[in-house]
Amino acid sequence: MSLLPPLPEGQVLAIVRAPERGLSTRSAEVDPRDPAVAQLAADLLATQRGAAGCVGLAAPQVGVGLRVFSLDVTGHPKARACHGALVLANPVIVTASRWERGREGCLSVPDLTGDVKRATRLLVSGSLPGSGAPVTVETDAFEARALQHEIDHLDGLLFLDRVAGAHAVHARKVYL
Amino acid sequence: MTLFAVTVIGNDRPGIIADTTAALARLGGNLEDSTMTILRGHFAMVLLVSADAARSDVESGLSPLEDDGTLLVSVREVPQEYDVAAPGAPYLLSVHGADRPGIVSAITAEVAGAGGNVTDLSTRLTGDLYVLLAEVDLPGSADVEGLSRRLREVADGLGVDVSLRPVDSDLM
Ligand SMILES: [Zn+2]
Image 1: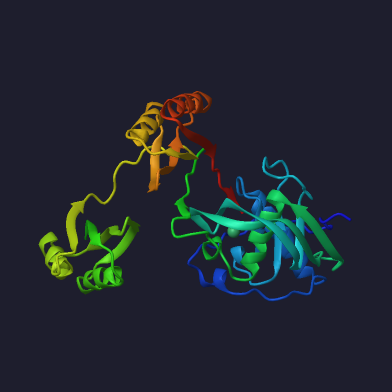
Image 2: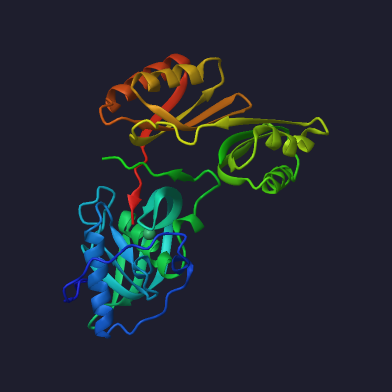
C-alpha cells in the first residue's frame, strides 16, 4: 500500500524555531479522516520540499500541535529501505532495535547539530491522513532515524533532548 | 556591553561552576558560549561572558575563587566577533596507538597543510594508549583522498592508527 494518499494542494508554511514552547509540548491525536488533517499533511510535505536538504517535517514545526508528519528520504545516500514520500497521522513506534549513533540537524534548531542514538530497525504504525486507513512502516537505516526524529517532535522532544553527551552538540556548518 | 573570556583552571571540586556563575550573575553578566572538562583531575573551563562592567570589576568579582589557592582565574576582553573562516565540510579525525612525542603536531600539521581547520579536539592518555579525536572542517577545494593518504603515511611512521571520516548531519 502506498504511504502517500491522495492529498489536496499543499501550501508552504513558516517554520517555527526553538525556543518556541510549542516545540516542547506533546501534540494531540487527530481524526485522520478530518479533511483538515489531509490539508495539514499536504502543507507539511510542501513545506518540507521547499526546504533544501530537509527529509522530514512534523506539525509542531509549523506551529500546529497535532500528531502528523511528512517524510521523504528518496535518494539520500544513507538510506537503505525507502518508502518515498509519505505522510502519517497518530504514529506509534511498535518495535525498535539495533541502536546506532548519528548526527542530526533540525530546521527548528538551525544553528546546531547533535549526535543521537537511534534504532536502525524500526516498525511504526499509524493512519493515512484522508482515508484514515491503518498502515505500518517497516524500515531501517536512515529512514528509521528520520521517522524517530519526527515522532519525537510529536512528543515535544528535540534532538537536544537525546544527545549522546555534553560535547555531542555542534555548530551546524552551512556548507554549499 | 563588553565580551570577556574567563578561564578557570585548577584542582577539581564540586561547586566551581556554581560559584563562578553566581559571581558573574552578581555582575549582571550574561553567559554566552562555554566549555568545561576535567583533564587528569584539573578542572578547566572557558566562558564567554558579556557584561556592562570593567575588566577590573569582573576580576575582583571572581577573586574569591582564588582564595584557597587551588584555582587560577583569568579575565580577558575579547572582540564581539571575529572574521570566521569560511565553513567547510565536517570530518571526524580519530587517532589511537602507543604514546610517543609528536603525534598531535605531526597529525595536525597534515590537516593544516590541507587547509583544514580543527574546530574541536580532545586527547586522552591512559596507560600507554594515546587517543586523539578532532572535528575538522575541510574546505570544498581540499583533496580529501590525498589528505587521508598522507595521514596514513604519518600514522604508519608513528606506529598509530588513523581514520578520517565525514560526519555530515542531515536536516529533519
Ligand atoms: Zn526536527
